[in-house]
Length: 93
Image (cartoon, rainbow, N blue to C red; front, side, top):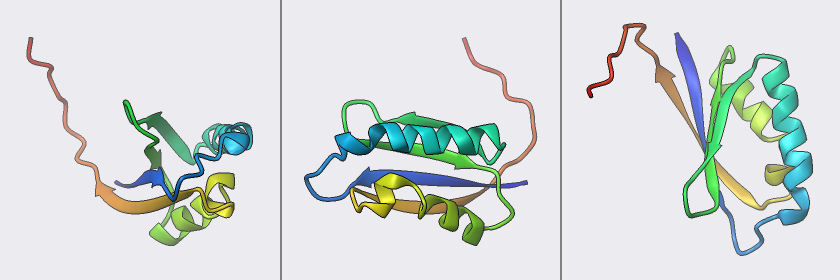
């Protein structure tokens, strides 16, 4: 299975605080549709990762380009395809 990991980073000095609610609403919609699997912020800096399950790199890119943070130019993004291996992991205690 191939998933797509998207890294968001700050572009310029504008953190886009006024865009936070529309950004979150957009991500919630993608999550509800099953396209966005999870997302999380970096610790101590602006940006984060998003994990997508889509049919292609191009589909992922098209979705990202509709995010208000990207539309308004306050974030940069990188997309990496991730070939997930389905094997059990055990946490070492």
